Image (cartoon, rainbow, N blue to C red):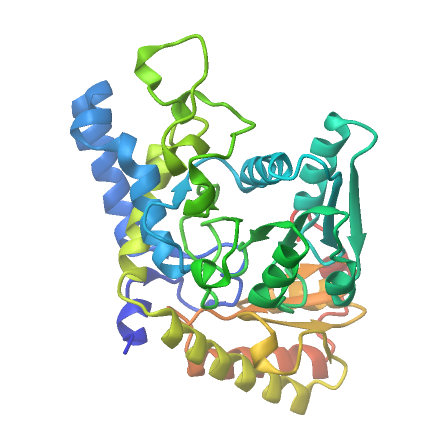
Length: 397
C-alpha cells in the first residue's frame, strides 16, 4: 500500500497553508531544490556542454516519458516529454488528421479546455475552409461520433467540474466509426488510473505541473500508440525529432517511434525538478491514490453541504464519475475564494461561478480536509467574502 504519510513529508508545504490547488499547480518536492542546485552546479557548471552526454540530458525526455507512462497505462517507449501542452495538442491533432485524409471534421465538446479548442481551430484554419471544428455538449459526444468525423479530441476530466468521459467506451465507438482519438490527460495523470493501452487509445497528451508536481512551466508529454508510432508524420518537424539530429541533414527524416514527436531542446532544469517529483510518484500506486482521493472528496462534499447551503455542487455526485477535484457554484465565488486564500485555504476560481478544490492524496489527508471545511464554513456563514478587496479580479484566478 502507498504510504501517504511518507509522501506528504516529502513536499514543501508552507506552515498554516491548506493547499487544495494541486490540480492547477503541484507543490514543491523538497528534494527538487537540492536536485536542481546540483544540476546547475555540478552538471551545467562543471560539465558545460558535455553535460548532454556525461549527465544524460538528451535522454531525459524519453526517460521521464516512461516514468509518466506507468501512471497512465502506456506501453514502454510510447511517451516522450517536452515543449508545452498546447504544442503537443497541435502535434497530436495534426498527426491524427493525416491518418484520416478523406475526412475534415474534428469533434470536441464545450467542456474541453479552451486552449485545446484554440489550437485545433488554428490548425484547421491553416488547412483550409473545408475543415471544421465541431463542438457539442459533453453528453452529446457519443451521438456525434459518425463516419464524417476524422478526429475525436477530448479532455478526459473536465477542468471545471471534474466530470469524466468514459475513455474506453468512447474510443471503441470512435474506432467503430473509423475515427482517430486524441485524449488530453491534464487532469487525469496523477489523479485517476488511466489505461491508454487497455483502452486502445491512439494519441494522448498532458502536462506535468499539476498533479505530477513538476513545477510552473514543467514540460508536457505526448503518447502515441506503438502501432502508429513508426508511421505517423510529425507536423512540427523539430531538429530533435530527426532520425539523426547531429548529421545536420537539410532534409527531415522522422526519428524512430516516439522519438519523432520531440521538437525543441529539452528544458533540462525543469526536467530535473520533474525527475525529483517522479521519485515520489515511483512510491505510489494509482489504485491507492484513487481510493484515497474518493475518500477525501466524499468527506469534503458531505461537510460542505452540511454547513454551506449557498454552495451548489457542480461536480458529479457519484465519485466514480468525477476526477480528483470538487467544484461548487456560488454567485460570488471569486470573492469567496479570495477570502479563503486570505485565511490559508488555497483553491481556485473558474468563470463564471466555480469554486474549485483539488485533492491530491500524496500530501492532503483527512485532517487537512476537516480544517479546510471549517474555514470555508466560517467564510460562508459569516459572509467574510463580502468586502471590496476580495471582489477585485487579479490577472490569474
